[in-house]
Picture 1 (cartoon, rainbow, N blue to C red):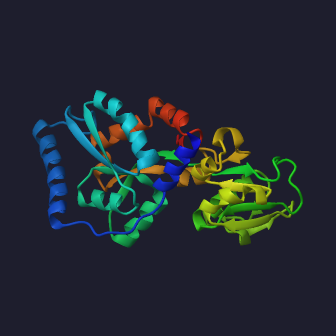
Picture 2: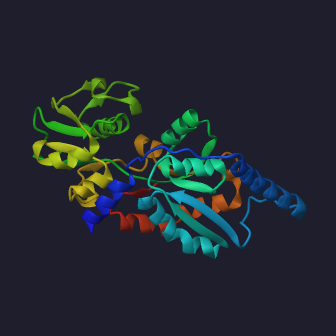
Picture 3: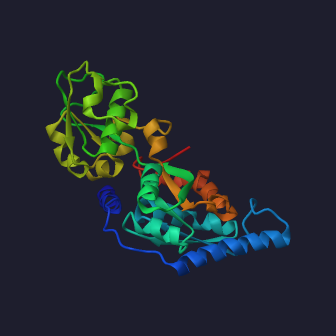
Length: 297
């Protein structure tokens, strides 16, 4: 089961090619939806910040794993609140934002806020976060060594070589007293920002997907949750340390529900976020993904 989940997780996080999308008719569709909602509010004299009307349908674009799986687990809870939740799966990281921006779907669930902000800047879209749902923690795992309290002098630690995850890995090492980074290095940290290195550890940068194959060659490795499963690690049982829910990285890179600007106030969107942050869905996430995916507070 762990190997199967790992392969699905790995595939789900791959980025596919960019394709075009968007037309004036789609924009008109989204505008009409907003106008209809406003007219209904005016006619009834009621605010829409309460419960969504019975029979409401909400369409959400999502990556297959874990996002679509989490949404599917929420369908019954949404139905109890009078909302039909339709989940449309995408395997790339571009189209889910395109279809939300065009008004073809109501929301998406696949990305973290820094990615969304960069997408808005590059594409000229105006999408916003309606709420943070989960994060996928990096963890420190044993290789030739297994005790963070007894690190060999000159130990090799493999970290992901992409900018985002390398910074997260270095922050995790710092949080566990292995290194100290320069002040304000934060989420832009690189190996050049190491200010103190009492164990003289050697930071080895490697493409994230390849690290699992090199576990036996290093003293410790820092892995994303999905790749940890691929290496037959249990995030809950085998991680010597992992990003906590209140860490800067977890809060920054939490996966979000994204919507068109202004739609975050729609009752059905607020209900979706509430359901996804409910105890029932938190329990589903914790028991299904063995620590590779964790609910955000």
